[in-house]
Length: 141
Image (cartoon, rainbow, N blue to C red; front, side, top):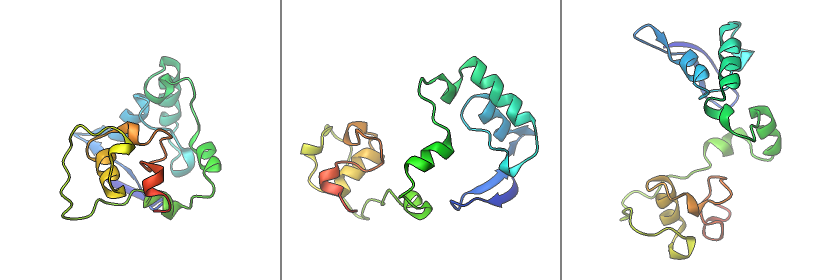
């Protein structure tokens, strides 16, 4: 790993290689990552992203593609620290297990709702996809 910087959100910016192959390039090629020229001058990423866009691979396959900068504008009231810590961890020692619960009406606590969303991947608990399950249980958390 070749570390380049830390961005405004506290994320490490780096070049990652495995067996001499660039993981960064492969992610852009497959449409799994958005090319961002701020941290590099390598035009390879621009070409790889263009190729992925034309082939409609990964995120480019969707009908409504939103540039990250545009997404951040729409969520401007959320600071980088609230975005990084938006999902609290489930209480240590909580006795939850993935079961048949699929609806907020079945959740008893916010911790349980987060457990089912994160550990059991029950997406129906977060219909607006903001990362907060069962808004009535988890409001203000």
